[in-house]
Image (cartoon, rainbow, N blue to C red; front, top):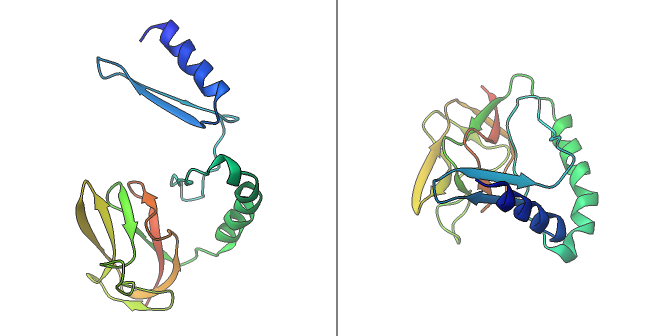
Length: 159
């Protein structure tokens, strides 16, 4: 990658409302540029969380609300809780169809092997099953939200 192209991408990023640019050159080399202070908040479990992109007009309100939501999630005690994690990158779905009820709700009892959600990747619907028997304490991802590999989806209190 030549320096001229990198400088051009930096200038585009600085002058636009974009938060991030990812560029792949002819040889397959990737460059990812992001705006910000360079520091990311990391949960104690060291999982990377994604924040959906916000339209320019809506930016002021979600930024004020987001830290409070994150504080509430961090305040939840994680003692003796087991996380059900996404085994793949994809889109999270709580139900098998848009008009169907969700697989599980907070307070539901699950057993090992029970389907708790679907993660769609490359047009394939992958059923995610519980590894433990327990009670669903918290659902950490909203329906139709993108998820990353190993991201926590549910917190389960083992029985």
